Picture (cartoon, helix red, strand yellow):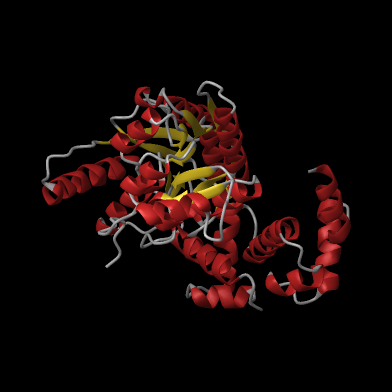
Length: 401
């Protein structure tokens, strides 16, 4: 069983840690208390900076206090009593967190920018054809109201109807009773709103909770309800019963901001507060659909989006949803204004362009990965849409970034 409490004399261990494993190590020691998904990238940047990160999860609190680190990077899960003891030792602390709270005034903090999240969420649902969206939030938190306001304003600008649902944050210990009551309340609210609807959750945990309630109510995700989280925490988004699409944050900028604040702390500067930006959306199953009131079209879209990279045809799509080809085409044109074949090509091109700009794979390899088994056909289509060859488009976008 793993335990961070050392049941033996730690004097020699402290000396070894202060000296470094191989002898005298004069690099500044940094206490690191972060979740695993954030820790790896930040540790790499700390090492690049010439510092020596030591994980609190390994040393334990008592041993870390013996080391008297001059700087530390922590998160909201770090014990406030431990943080206070670090401050009393003169340690300069940078806290990565979701919100600036009054009790964090003694620290430098790095938090996400919230307004752009609201705009990105609204535009994501608009791109998928939703006309009804909702913001689902915790009732107890007013600190990120601007994100909800931005979401609402942008969604209304794009012609969508917007509603709000608030989850109560009760700690009465009666988890099951609370779950059933909330499920009934949420079900009644959802029935009033109608489907399809796009739901933007305040954070990934709330997105996962909303996902569970929908499944319990027999609501299909994403065909009837599409759910978008905020933060893109892998431990939540990837392990939810339905993979949660989420707004991703600029992890590189976050790491750089943390290092900058730690440097200022070493130089004796007063605590300050900075933000880092969202980069876009990591798409998973929970919003991987185009909104449609026609269930056959919705299921056909799911089939296309799940199989675009295969050598499939419109006949395969029609067979998958048990429709005749002309019935499928008529439903697609009525719902989306384009045929099933056009949607298949659009999806393939969308993924191709994304891979073109985010990987360094050869263009011919990307053709096979995205269902374009005849490169010359892709090149003609790409040049007709973008006015350039794929290779030149990649170079141009790289020059502009």
